[in-house]
Image 1 (cartoon, rainbow, N blue to C red):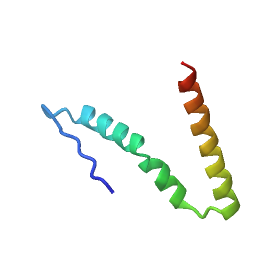
Image 2 (image 1 turned 30 degrees about the vertical axis):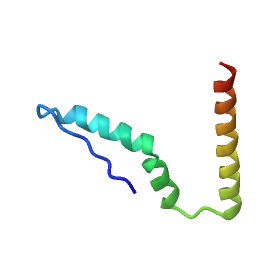
Image 3 (image 1 turned 45 degrees about the vertical axis):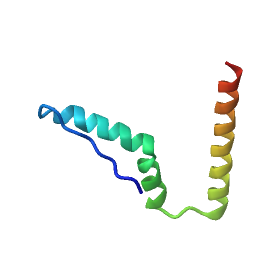
Length: 66
């Protein structure tokens, strides 16, 4: 795991919290925590992985068309 750091400048805690939340979202930590909260059946796991792969392919194809 990599460390996530946010520097607070001029006691602007609100901005630092927004930056931290964005970094955590981009890292995928929220998603991993949500998945680990409850048991996921193997069939659901495979289905989710297939959906994620399909989504990645669609995004790559859309980028390639530009």
